[in-house]
Length: 55
Image 1 (cartoon, rainbow, N blue to C red):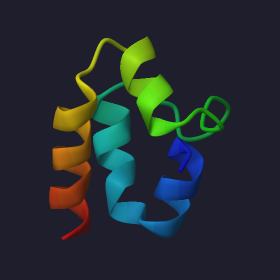
Image 2 (tube, helix red, strand yellow):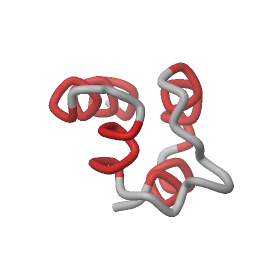
Image 3 (cartoon, rainbow, N blue to C red):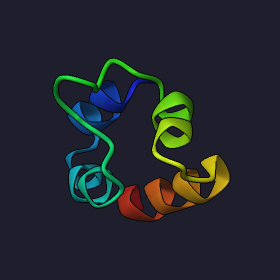
Image 4 (cartoon, helix red, strand yellow):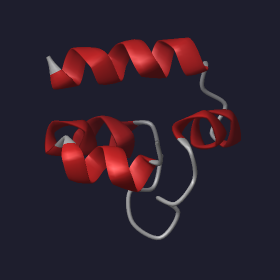
């Protein structure tokens, strides 16, 4: 799933993506895996935070 798709389906994730410098607009076409790696974030940590934001 891309960052943009996630943000669209789960709007509560938008502030988290912003805090992690993961673009939800222009760069939102990247997968969460790629966006996390490009921004120096551990994928598992990002996924845990996303799960918490969605819950």
